[in-house]
Length: 194
Image 1 (cartoon, rainbow, N blue to C red):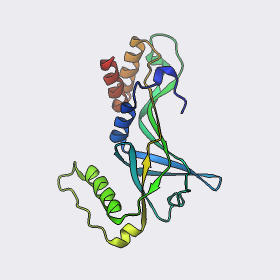
Image 2 (cartoon, rainbow, N blue to C red):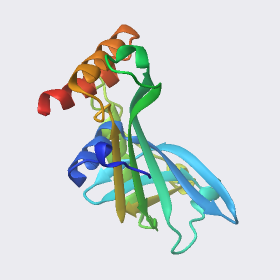
Image 3 (cartoon, rainbow, N blue to C red):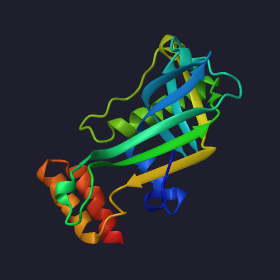
């Protein structure tokens, strides 16, 4: 991922925290000369991403030693030059995290069960009556679970850092006016931390 100086993060922790927050990513791999991509939830376990695919998905036949890329996209939105005090051009602000690594298939039935239980617990935790997994072994045989060592992580926060404080304030106000509060809030947090 191309990350100009203005949009780089100072440490890897920012990207890891965004992965935890976003949770849903697109895994891309090259299979027989063709790109394949699957959107799925991930769980981060230290320096690993955990996930699973339907066994029928072509991506589930991981090529030995072949790297995959997982993209996590955070808040994003159009930025009008009308929100700036100084001249500018239209652009797009966004948050993106790219993870690269070689997947390892989980073959141990208990490891697969534990992965699914942890993933379910994460997303059920906010519900009034969280569902408790009780999978039929046939269901578990229909998936391929894997862990992906985070070999490389690129994080890009394109939040108008290359603009003046006045222009950034204008962008935050403009985003709020069009209802993009998630991106405006993220920009405001970054402004407050500066």
